[in-house]
Length: 223
Length: 299
Image (cartoon, rainbow over all chains, first blue to last red; front, side, top):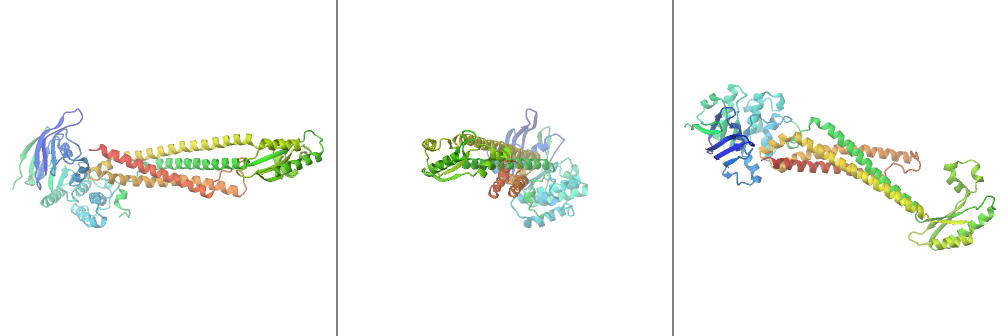
């Protein structure tokens, strides 16, 4: 599904943020990415969601070597990835419902086709009564849940989430993890960057840790 | 839920756009005024040319005060006869005393003094369109039959008038071109400024896998509609002004004597529609090129 080989990344003439990062995410796997602030987690996720090209090394996504894949193919690859950004990146002038519906709209679906699914999903993340509220009037935790709903609504092949439970209470965090687990059960490969040890301990998922830009395998998935 | 489709609302109506819309309204108004002025100048120049071309004027000038009026009348009759017998001249009209006096009235008034002035007799001759009249030969024949006759084919005036008319028309076109370029630049600037403010939306759509064409269509439609609306308001205001001038003209009110009325005919007003259409096309093209360029810069 995802393969990084000796990937290095630096911004401008600064030091390398990622060094010789090598790992594979198997299809249908569930993985946590941990590490101290500034260890390179967000940069690694950025490379994985085709947000930046690596300075060196090889990235293979869905069987495509990114170095040799035509740029015109990238949009099709990006559509197979759901991303929960740390800063949410919701469109402030659209309602929660419309923000979540955006990926489906991009995929060419009509409103009648997705209306029920979006309603249900927002209900699942606890925002059933705020479908038509715009992000600026939602709390940080609510905005985060809208961002998560938007990332999963199109049932992506790969879900990448950067601190998806950072702004929510324990109950909601537990509910969101169940949502991710359900998505994973349906076949989505999941990579979650988090500091939340409780979250990690509650699951049997694999854990990879970034230390000073280098990747360390801490725990393999438990049966 | 909003009745408009989601796709048409991905590009937001930005709060800071009103001043740019006002600028587009003003530029479209100025461009429409310049276009209208060009059309009026062109029409006036054409009218001046046609008014003098194809006409000859014979003056029978009294050589000195106290010359017998019957001598002038005889010379006038002789000149009329020669003009009528000349090939290519289709109408010969000696002007009456009243008509001649009315020509000088605007300058010296209509008092009793006019009748005492030694005004020349005037004969207006119309040349058939396309006919070539030997002006030199005609002048000689007139001189023999009426020694006080002077033939004026308006050539001197026509050359200068043509130069003046061409100058006015080309000046109007030049001003129109300048305002058109300024309007185009304003629309392009307004569009690019709006897009700069929405770079985060472009980046998000790109990240979500939207093709460059989809992102461009989202924004180009937005800017096409808003510019079309703003420029229509500007052009409509200019059209209203020209229509008002036309109303004054029809009511017989002449704001500036001797100058052509600043009014457009109904078919000329149709040209006003070109301004918002051109502005909308510029906004559309600018938005498309800017978005495609922005997307191509993102990985």
